[in-house]
Image: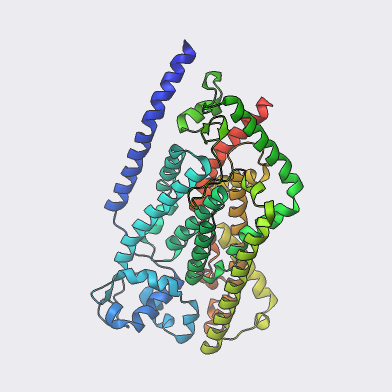
Length: 476
């Protein structure tokens, strides 16, 4: 009798929980709309705003219709304005970001507060796609709403609303990036692959440090091929066990054994998911089949098995690898030509070793500065999910965690190289910025901020995944 009443209470809570989460999300959105934000900007964004408004004084000039007016409502802009308008600082411009801040141009004048309003919608869109990403990984809309609520409650994320920088736009594009991969891992659709190429191009237009991120999936597939003997056994075991379980169930849909009282069973009923698979069955066979629809089709087997059949990994890796090489060559040719035009050619040997050593220390401390307790714990959960072989738990989470880690590593490497060369440019333009003065020009502290929403979303799903894995281990 007690177990039956527990089931009734769980069912009632299951129906009520979505409305509770939605009401809390709506309240956070209303709070964002009612709050006032003062525009802020970093050095790089100020450079782009300076040259854009100087070159387009009629369509997007300063509020006093002059490129030299002291009326741009961004703290610190007047102090650095004359410095930014020097020709050499065009090296730090971002054409993609300038297209974005054109949304602040109205009636021939530039209004940073309009960009701040657009940032609100960017944050909302970012959280919406984070929820969709969580839905792809977990199969639960309630878990997706929990992810949305956590991101709406994240202070460091909401504090970006008043920043007239490219951080929010890059975070949104990176969310597109991982969501496209999650869809590709589920469907194997070439349309998803084309979408990833387009997102990669948009990222590079905004900031060239993303020229290597397209190599994340090929790198993951190469590692998978090298360690295929280690990965194949748990994957085949999971696939065969799941197939046998579905055949034993017949037309029923497995929903977990709530009567047992296990925590995972209770969570599964609350979150609206099944313990092992979220796919219903028909006639005793799984409905996860390869259908002709390129967007809604679902792979018959796990991606880690499917991609190594018929040498698919070579074709996919070849496409993405060729694209990344072409993108790299294009960016390098364009940047070298830009350097010659600005007469800023520099060599790595222009600075002594002690300056580089100090700069590396500053770069490392700046990179680690965004890590707080929540983000650190979330990152640890992601790393743990990468270390657990995919024999149980949520499907494709293993691949998505590895993709996230490899993407972060590739962006770190490329950012380190670009920031190092920017130091040489700063040495030519203003030698006084060498040392701690160069910290304000670094992208190091932005790397984790770019990936922060993704890390938090994956960590939430990862906790549930670890509970599923623990339950499987106990049952065996």
